[in-house]
Image (tube, rainbow, N blue to C red):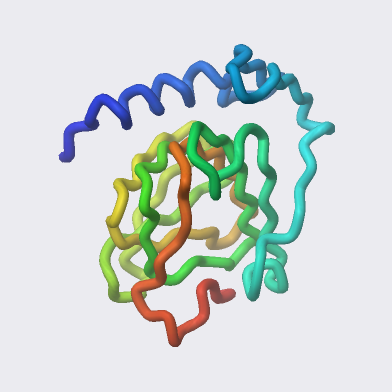
Length: 166
């Protein structure tokens, strides 16, 4: 089991402080962004870019911008059967499963049968540069992810699709 560094530990505390359960998200004021309070009905979901959006995947930006320096909080919505292919991110990502069961695998070989479940209420850390793949099997999955930008995504196999439906 990997130890969390101070940055990842601080982000984990951020996830807890964001009220990962149901209800309102309330963040303190920073120099760059105003306080944010959103009810679930106020969260603005948009199609995920590229092929994933065509498969029904959605994302919502709750705080910050993952493409810019600083703290960000996003939500991802995987429809049943949609799974990402092996990829990594340049930042540590701290996540919580809000709905459904997320199925996660590690490494550069895409093998959905080798994934392990993280049920609703579960927590995970994806370290920067760590190749992984994740998604939904039989039910919709909603994740909340906290990271320090700038973030991005690097595919293990750029010639393959980013997401597929099983």
